[in-house]
Image (cartoon, rainbow, N blue to C red; front, top):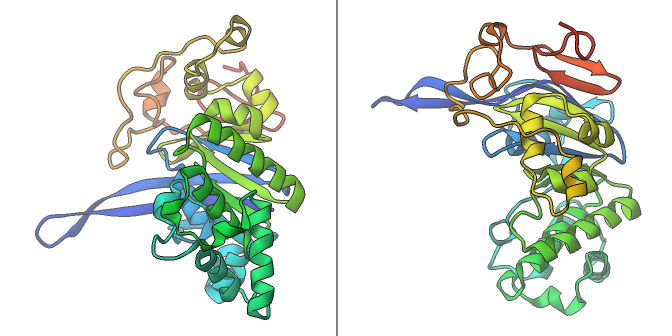
Length: 328
């Protein structure tokens, strides 16, 4: 359904009195990615890895600096320039914080009715009201909440409204930008179950952006790891968690908290990184992870590793792997 090829998004850094360009932030730097219909791709990384920027570029909040986005076989960027409304009807986003993504001056009804008007869903006020009531049932909220303001709802209820708004145009592809991270743990679980049931019921495809690998273990069908704008590792969820290959992935998985010895057995050996994440304005030469990697080699400082398939469906960007796992 979605294919990214060498996708890049750079932001200029300006300095001096004349505000001239003195550098650039490579927020997304040459990402290749495929998402199949019905899939839940978990896009994971630390803060500053570029995962949210990648999601914003997919939905059109940012224009790509370079590269292509193919959606259902056609150029999504070109389609967006020709007919922004048609594309946004198919591709929607749920933001992280419903407190800031919902207009506090509008009632829930006004918020949900706006995309119906923009995309011409519902021929009359009566028909649109029926659609709004169905949306509220879909996200498991009482109909009277339509006439409340966002401030009268809890965080979990506001996020359900945000999900309903994204579904109003009847899309088939959603970017979920850390939709549960601003919520309490019990509310997170309920919203996650809702998103999973909506995927089955409405035949949706998700790119689920998160920093929580333990959540992805239970939710995602495949996982992509990002670090400083680049993908480190991509695989289907089961082999990804059973055999993580990249040192950065192993570091992330080894740091997941567990509550039983059985869970501890399934974690990779603890990888302790050194140093902090480098500045995205001054990314290290060669492999960007080399300054923190416990397995760093001489080649890592001079040559950026190739993103290659080292096992069937399992892609890694690391000099530790040749054409086969374990190759010198």
